[in-house]
Amino acid sequence: MSDLNKLTIAEARDKLRAKEITSVEITKSCLDAIDAADALGAYVHKTPELAIEAAKAADARIGAGDAPDMCGIPLGIKDLFCTQGVDSQAASGILKGFKPEYESTVSQKLKDAGTVMLGKLNMDEFAMGSSNETSVYGDAVNPWKVDDRNLTPGGSSGGSASAVAADLCLAATGTDTGGSIRQPAAFTGIVGIKPTYGRCSRWGIVAFASSLDQAGPMTKSVRDAAIMLEIMCGHDAKDSTSADISVPNFEAMLTGDIRGKKIGIPKEYRMDGMPSEIETLWQNGTEMLRDAGAEIVDISLPHTKYALPAYYVIAPAEASSNLARYDGVRFGHRATLGAGDGITELYEKTRAEGFGPEVQRRVMIGTYVLSAGFYDAYYNRARRVRTLIKKDFEDVFATGVEAILTPATPSAAFGLGEMTDADPVQMYLNDVFTVTVNLAGLPGISIPSGLDAQGLPLGLQLIGRPWEEGDLLNTAYALEQSAGFVAKPNKWW
Amino acid sequence: MSIDTATAAKVAKLARIKIEEDALPALAQEFNTILGFIEQLNEVDVEGVEPMTSVTPQRLKRRNDEVTDGNQQDKALKNAPDAREGFFVVPKVVE
Image (tube, rainbow over all chains, first blue to last red; front, side):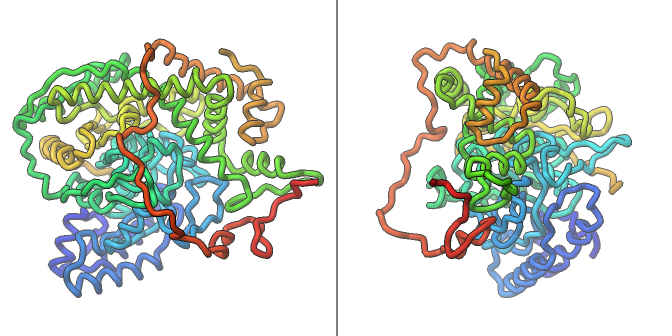
């Protein structure tokens, strides 16, 4: 059987159960696709031997009966996840050669479920970026292409998005601090969900902004997202912010019935200068949900405008603290010192050599907003605004609204290199629709919902109530069925 | 609030990132762009609003105060750029 790499998780699971195919066959199909796709820059550390070994073990487990749902499913893992004995660099020069002695909780859960890791995936350095252009490995490339330009797959989970869209795995892990799962998912025509803060353990995931970071799945369908998210979630004593709340069977909640569900349309997301195609997509999505029986209501989230500025205080502040650990002493890169250089020069040279420009910029902004004299004016003010942003959502949910529909991104994928000369703030605007969700700790999902005039995918975002991922996935499932997005990129790589 | 090159140099020093003298003006300019964007927060009335400490209302879990991990010196040193005799090695820090 050919093209096994193109299967969804659900399809592969059923065929594996029916003994029509083996995990080794799917895995080999993926490995062949990966080797033919170096032009996409999606995989940065390939682990074919480990993959075949894991696939054989999975086949044996399936043969013995009673294997978990994802047993034998080949996945790509974002480079931000620490994977035991396998390079885990967060796409940074400062972690060159770092091979963790431990496995992140989320990737361990996926391993325990019998999944097969194909390799590590490209991303923006330390997950700081929206185009995968800050990676030390070089750009990841979007498999979607409409002219001779190479387009960004988005970021920071750009390699994950590219790999899923190009069928270089059945699904991938991502992480999302300000939109890093949902924006790349939208740019590549796939599904990506960021669960409620605390659903997935952050243990063993290289930290960027600890109060915002969450892991989540990036998949070819909403059903796959439900299957994979369930495995990734769950309480972990090793992460003090991980929630001790039971994880339901998300897939069982996909009925597609959203009759009577109250869905809010926030007026503040109608931005000045928003392309008409995004506006049309949003209107179409609204109509689809209405046709499916949902009750559509206009809502207001008055502090939306202040989400990005608050984010660009809070995230760099937390990053400057988290990234203090990269000092050239315990792991990763260490600069070569000159005569007379002491410990301070060791730190300063190591960090100047090891961090790329965007990471340096954010660490220094964070240092500035936390420094004496500015802490109240910047950091505490941003945290107050964050309280107000969260309250906006709470007020809306208190009126009975169960989900909120917005565009996922302000545009389709742009060309790699096109933003190079723009100031950093222009790049930050990519996350304008997604970042509120991280600040409020809510679950959010991006669903491929249409193509723009050039033929590039566009996504819609649904935002849910805390811990209601199952209900959110079901609404997304209804939207997915109505949108009927089946387009795939033409293979050029 | 405008950042000059002296402030940029001070921030780089605090962040322990070596920035060459000739790169400071451009860096100061970037800081000003980003901080100018952040200044919008001053428009918000935050009187009486508590700064957020935890996005999900939860008490941190407690456990018994007992050793659950450790004795992994080899693993801890495995990725060190320079480790000798069971220690991380750094330049001399005391005179």
